[in-house]
Image 1: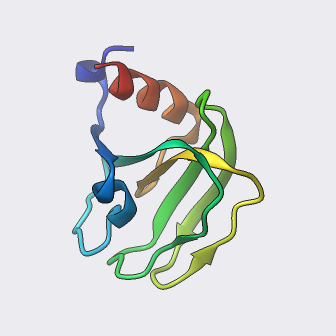
Image 2: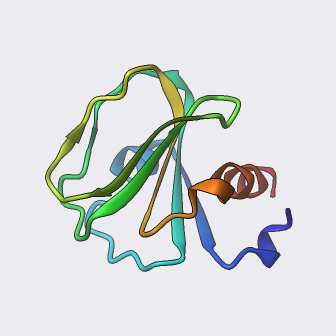
Length: 108
């Protein structure tokens, strides 16, 4: 799938930007933030300083969905059950298309 044909605007964050994620950002529906940890890790995810409830999708290195958390309110913790490489954050995410959209954003 070509990213230009996507209705969503996708931002890939790496390094320290991936650690910060969407904290303090006024994200809108249609914006997808892909946090690339660089390698599979086991970490706790939080929504501290996020301004709106978020959909959070956790993916492994092969972009398989591990967990989905819908409408997670600000100032909450998520304790993933396995290690992961990617975290996708957004509002009202289309879970059926998320792996395709992430894959296309990482290729381009």
